[in-house]
Length: 358
Ligand SMILES: *Cc1c(COP(=O)(O)O)cnc(C)c1O
Image 1 (cartoon, protein in one colour):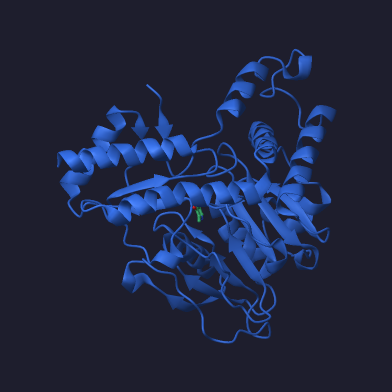
Image 2 (cartoon, rainbow, N blue to C red; image 1 turned 120 degrees about the vertical axis):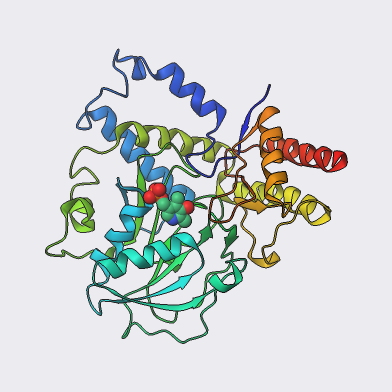
């Protein structure tokens, strides 16, 4: 049975990458040592981390005045690191409340003593569309505007970035990192854990403009951008295996033709599912059409028992992890970069057959 994993994260990885990890695991590049046991201070790992950085720069066309850093602690760690490093002038930030993760980011900044102005929220609409700010924002008021480009749980995405005046834009790209093209120059800082689109759990990528990296006193070193810049992301032991595996996924992305091609494929994959759902009399996706995510597609029969039957029957045929997040319920198919179009077709065929029988 062919298995397709629709999990929201950690998530499906490309088959060739899993096979390469398997074949190289006992002995990396003929050294007789595993990636699991080599030193982060070895020349071999230096090459791995520098190549990964260069491949990120190539794939995203990262301008030279931006740093590419590797952290641990996930997106959640960055919910603390970003305000600690960047909210140092006004101690005030703006936020668009587009869902669970945006609101968690706001809570963490608040915990750290930063004032958070929620410019707009679509909570009352169950986050089925995106909040847009119509205020004119000024850097004389805010240190930055926090935007969640893709809302993993709710299934929305900013395909066009919100207006932000001259205020620095901070993007949480956790769930559409390199799944959809953005212009790095439009952001002061981008972050995301790799476990949705780019690798196994354990490493968080931060891309930050040079002028925003300043020495900041009294913050934990492990979250300090200026220290990580100085130490080339090796202030302490980095997640060696996760960076290695992410490096393999980056090579795979290049072989697929880069991000323009990946986005084209992701549009095609998600359209296949959305078109079916829009025609279906049993299943519905409630997201406003222009705001729909390319990577996370929630849908439901509006009957919790029937939803559970679908999830179970799908798993019996190898279509795994279709349960929606507990806050939304229903089903959710995550269609990250490594999900082949054949997997989406298999899902649509399965849903169609289920609908015929019910
Ligand atoms: C998964 C996710 C997070 C949290 O990431 P962790 O790596 O689990 O801390 C934050 N933001 C978004 C948009 C996410 O999808």
